[in-house]
Image 1: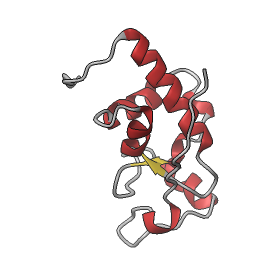
Image 2 (image 1 turned 180 degrees about the vertical axis):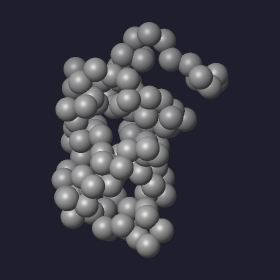
Image 3 (image 1 turned 135 degrees about the vertical axis):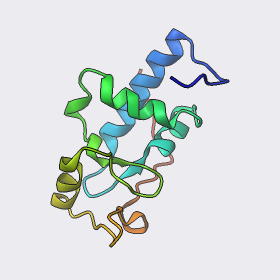
Image 4 (image 1 turned 90 degrees about the vertical axis):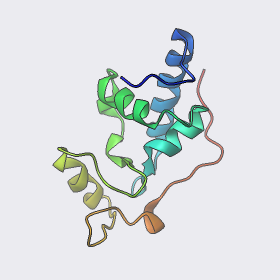
Length: 116
């Protein structure tokens, strides 16, 4: 695991995990957001990869719309073909290069609040 210069305490990690789950749960149908955007919303902008790990390893994350999280250029998660299928079923348009059309589907909330 990468050694981040701004390491989290155990309490900060719990808060980060809770905030990630809360944000992902709010992504509307037919929209996507990025790992980096979620990290920034939690207050940890350098932790985009940790957003992905949180979604992969946290029990209960499978009940969230994790398929609506893509990388910064709209690429879906490698090895998860179902992600593309789910997004297509929601009306998300993909460009010829296989990436989500971010100009049409990017969700950028400015007022996401974490739950206590």
